[in-house]
Amino acid sequence: MKFFLVLICLVGTVTPEILAQQNKDAASHNQEKRKSTQDLPDFNHTLQLEEKVDTTANVSMGDFDGDGHLDLLLVKGRHWPIVDRVLLGDGMGGIRKAYNLGKVADRSYTGGLADFNGDGFPDIAISNDSPDSKRIYLNDGKGSFTIGSEFGLPEWPTRNLSVADINADGLPDIILANRGDLGKTSNYICLNSGKGQFTANCIPVAPYPATTIAPADINHGGFIDLVVPHRDGGQSYVYLGSSAITFSDTRRIPFGPSDATIRVAAVADINADKLLDIVTVDENKGVSLYFGQKDQTFSAGIRIADSRIVPYALTLVDLNNDKKVDILVGHVEAPSSVFFNDGTGRSFNSISFGDSKGTVYGFAVGDFNEDGKLDIAAARSDAPNVLYFGNRKP
Image (cartoon, rainbow, N blue to C red):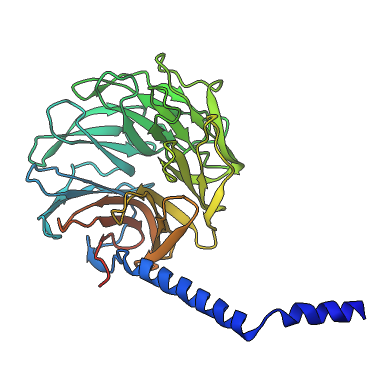
């Protein structure tokens, strides 16, 4: 009898008035969500950057010819030698001229932009896989490039590179992520010795396979630190910088799982607490966020998306101009996604854009058509490269 009475009491508390209020609250929540989503860019207007399909690995944006308009560099090859391409923008969202970066076909992954020789023009560092040399292409200021120097060793299994002033001498240095065999590989820092030349003896860091390395002053110590995600089933670390320009295993901070297969890690203050956070794409674990903490450690991972749709490319950028860092993710044979941040880093409005062709290997973001809204260039393997314009929904 007691059980019967309790059951009647529980059922009796859900009155028609309560149900009506619950439905009203749910409708209001859905309306607010739809309203907030309507204010987001849709990226439905596109420009196909090339007719042919190949193994493009990355894309960069910069003003190569000094006309004040953004241009594109398509970095090609991966494991197969292809010539990289320069596409000059017309300032209205079109391509006015396209040509080869140089004459050498190589196995490229990244085109890092910086003024390597100090002449005021953006030059290009190309990271090449073995057995190709890694090269600096110097810009004459009009978008014409010639090989100026080499860095690192041709036999390194280099994937992507990043650029930062590691030794604080005012010259951009190069950090190379190498995906070699476990126990037999290292990543390297190649210092700029001036005029776009690089020292012969590069500095080893993080003796494990990586495909990207993100430079940032993680601990606010005044030196560039290196976020090195493990690519092939191991622990990832942040290596702390110092005036000695050494990155020792004794001065590193772990983040993420002990069996990571992270392709890309990127750094930004996602939750606006003035501490840098790390976002990763792991093809086996999905998209994860690790909050930086006051004790210079990182939180357990917060899952942004799982790996049922395999993530492969990552960029952190404020795409809707609300001063909150958003998460842009490219996938394997699936549309790309933007996770729009509410500012807490714990709640996101997500949209998808593009088709399901090929694999997105990299992004470049900028206002390519100069309408005040950011656009997204996507470098894809086995599918055409595409520029997505950041139109806003009516």
